[in-house]
Length: 311
Ligand SMILES: [Zn+2]
Image (cartoon, rainbow, N blue to C red; front, top):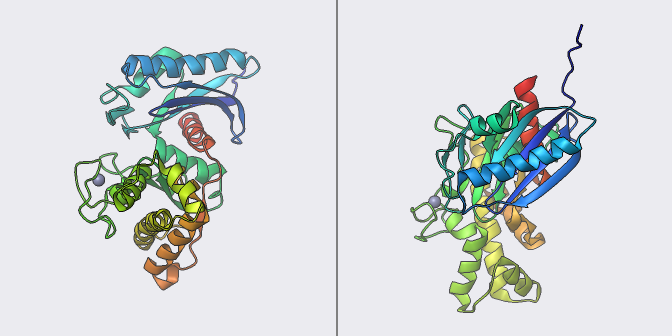
């Protein structure tokens, strides 16, 4: 009689606007092999899918000892985890909206596929294998080019009735004034506290040209008062919003990730102080932690999803 074999590994994909990463992951969350490629974002959905499937195929060929039983995918864009389709996406991924991500990858690779938005995947990774492991509920905030969030409850992410939960950047912020937001609205958190927004604020205040947020951070480190103020403003704006979300959700832990969270102590001190100003007394001890898994987090979250799909 043939023996039924439990798949010992799964594949994970993190499809971003500029980079696609793939990994082979064990049930314990160990990455045993990985590959990355540039996302052909301008070339359309078929090219993006071919690149992603190609990475998984190459990893599968190399994993001669292990059987890849399923694939988990974290992708940029609003993803409906029930249908596996991309509902909407930014211009960085041309033609991505409407793509049957789950169906087409399943067809190309012949394994069960689970899909979710990449911020939710990042949160799942931290909640299952990272700094939030051990907490039943985690509020994750990613602060980078945009600002997104995810709420994880007992290993499941809250994606909402329209798969759009987590758009924490698009809530009103008292620090954003009437600044235009990427969503078409104005006065939203993302309009003042994302990486590009902080760079823009520095330019507005000083009239000096800077390339990016790293340049602003370097000036702050050199004692530039305007640069320091802008970084403090960013931390305060995010912290204020996080404090409100903590009051709403009462998470076991808050985890902050994304490129802007790499700004260092100045940003973090402002953030933590603002969280504490907003939170109710019974929530003063909710830990606010830095994401520790880095770029592995969405892969490990996607792998967690893949395991759930086959167990
Ligand atoms: Zn907005």
